[in-house]
Image 1 (cartoon, rainbow, N blue to C red):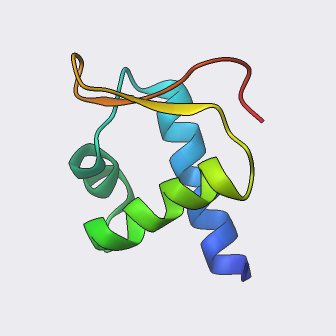
Image 2: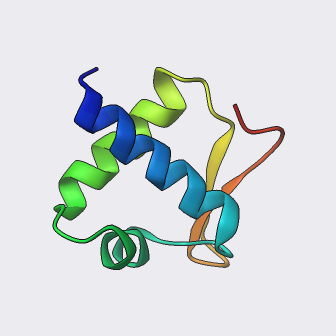
Length: 70
């Protein structure tokens, strides 16, 4: 993982911790010039590579941590 990707994933992690159930569009608004597809890949990397207990709530329409975050 390159430095820019790591920093972007770190920012996504912080948004998920700080905002109530952010969705991809909210994350995109907060971070700026990244595509929804890039952000979706970053969220998958958080879950798969970093073993984050990240879930998506259909009821609330956004992401949250289901357990202690990494």
